[in-house]
Structure formats: C-alpha cells, structure tokens
Image (tube, rainbow, N blue to C red):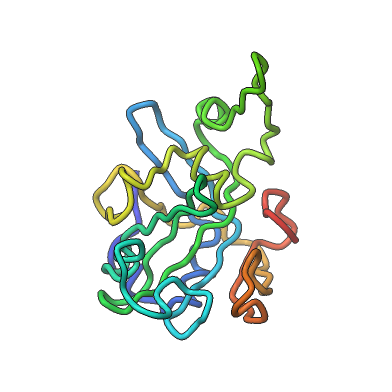
Length: 200
C-alpha cells in the first residue's frame, strides 16, 4: 500500500500539516493483524507554545519530538494512557501533531478486542464510533505502544500514513482540549460533520 513519503512531512509547517493530515489513513501492520483509520481530528503543538512538551527543553520523555519530520512521538499521560504524535519540523526543533481521532476503516474486530474492558467476567462493548474517538482510545485500538513505536519512522515501519482517503470536506479550526496553558490558541482541526470526532 502506498505510504506518504518524506517530502510530504517536510513540505508543511506544523499548523498546515495538522490540517493536511485530515483525511489521511493511519495504518498499523502488526503481528496481530492490520488496523487502519482515517484521521478526522488533530492538534498542533509548536515550540513557542506553552502547552507543547518541547516548550522548555529536550528531556528523555520528549526526545522523540526532536527527531526528523515523519517520525513518531508516543507519550504517557495520567500514568496509564498513551497518545501518538507525528513529528512535524526539522530535526532538533521539537514540534508535532497529535492525532486525536480516527474513523475506523480496517481491522475493526481487532480494535474491539484491544479496546474491550473487562468488569468481572463481562467485557465492555464499544460502538464503532467509540473505538477511536479520542487520542488514548485510538492508540489502544491501533495497538500503538511506547516501547514499539516511540521514535520510529512512518517512512519504513509497520506504522505509517497513506495519502488522503477523503478530500471533499470542510475543516473546522478551534481550540485544543484538556490543557490549561495555551488553551486559547486555535490549534485543533477536525472534519466538519464527521461523527468520529472526539468533541465538536
């Protein structure tokens, strides 16, 4: 399957890339099977942005964010969930685009197994919309891990992006979710009217 090449990631500055990623398909060819989903919501994080992990300095946690464009930055939140980002600037700068929501397109049964939460003996069943409508949810559904994907490249790894599967849509620009600093910056983008967006 065709994947986006290095020129695509180098062509756009971070805010533009966050919009260009909408409609592209995120694919993971894992040993368990293939899962994929169309990106329907993103957030941009820039070096001068107080909400950006690279705002202060490079650390062990955010080191992958300073890698080359087209690489992957995975981080832990709340001590139990992970989020996945696409590094979006030249090496050493520290900018990325958070993938916030996907519209599942392939491997739905595998996504459901990964997302199933057991309460006693009964697994919690998720609707198709609930599988990937949030950054931590999609990471779990797609089988993306900190150990396996942080610092990897979308150019030649099992996790990659394809050219847009959807192009005929309107982009909504708004503020980001779940942050305190930089909360007023219009750095979140989503496909208008798409039911898989995490929050309108």
